[in-house]
Length: 78
Image (cartoon, rainbow, N blue to C red; front, side):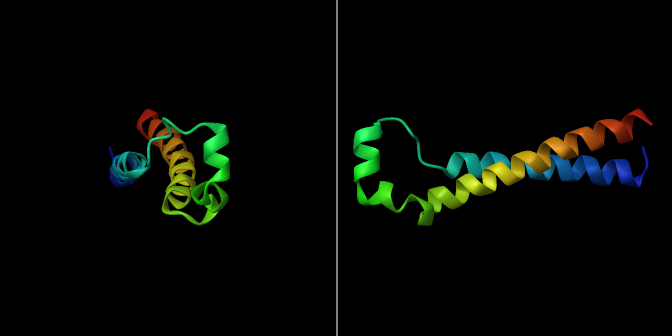
């Protein structure tokens, strides 16, 4: 394995660890019904909350993680 293979592998591991931490920081969605969740102040301002920001980071990091997994596989196969 060359230095590119090692770099991509380490990046994949780091993104996976960061992704795990961000997912664990999010609030649980259990116990929120559609009636009470939409009518509260929290439900009305969900776009501005920490949970919303973490959710956006989760999506971005998941896409990056999937791309890195494919790139890592291609690097190791060559």
